[in-house]
Length: 378
Image (cartoon, rainbow, N blue to C red; front, side):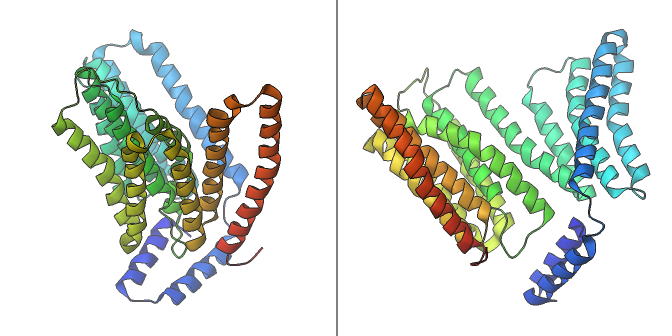
């Protein structure tokens, strides 16, 4: 079932032309009809690996001959680099939709290389995040025209990358680096990762949303570590203080962008994302007041809430992620607060018991929650 067809079905359901039961029956029928023609994982692996090797080979060829070209030749080569992949995708669209999608994805990736190579040709190095902004706009325009998931994925990745780059440059140029400025970046990254990760509701699965779940799940791990680091440390490292105007803009984007994305993905159900925002603000706001020990139970509470969120909306990946965050919180607490207060043998024995007993109990609880998330079905 193609994404454009699924999007139309969602639009018809929202408009009231068909009810939810009919839409579910149509989705199930199309899944049954499409199983025989669906591409298997070796085909997807071949397409992905081929796209990676093709893009790498072209970039290596360009870099090897870059110094031999005139500025005009370099610019023409950049244009051809971007246009050739999309032209090849259009030429192969009727024969293989999957190959055309792959070539369009490589073309969108080549756009970023073309933008930065074009900036090098004309010595445009005044403000390097502008290149990311142009790449984001190009990916968004390609997504609007093609309605394919690779362009959506590029847009979802490049937009926060551009905003983080702008924030880093604004902080670095004026030596405003401080724990507060790092918290803005950490909170924004974490909240957007959570928004992507929880963007799928059980009653409306689609390819675009599933890709967002993967992006959010992968980015949630480093963003959680970043947020944990800036929320645990309370030492002030400010050179000059960050101006209130710049700090207000940073917090507005860090909170507003994930909230807007959540409303677009979940509509009325976006209130759960508001709870996630309040959880993050409490984490970074109350830490200097209540001390370091507050961080551990608060992370455990957030992990339990994420797992409950998964049970409520029948999403097992949230249960698994919540269990992983809870386990990481317990182990971090043991290493930082307990292990150094015990002897060597006692600390190792306690660590072994924590892995055996704690891991066994957590796995039993995780399986029970997954069972509930699947509606009581094994």
